[in-house]
Length: 92
Image (cartoon, rainbow, N blue to C red):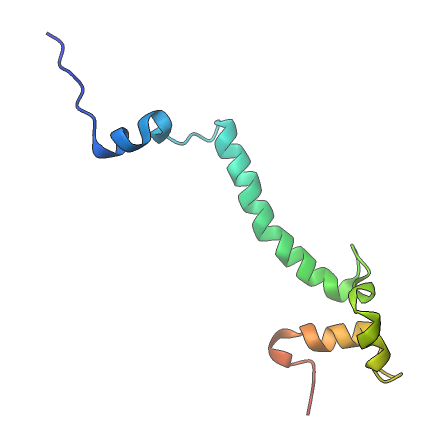
């Protein structure tokens, strides 16, 4: 005698989408790639603002503001002072 399977509330709401996550599942692999990328990308971009390996960040300072800076303050120095954590780059 075969018993009917009683659906739980989760199975009723999500149907077959409650499958067990497998490391071999292409969906889970894509999720992990995006997860790692969204963690690494902001860190790499933040570090690059000071070392200029990937992008010349000085070009992103608007010319209007670059013209307001004193001649002794280069756009690179300005970006280092303004982007340093907690304003620790600027001393009073």
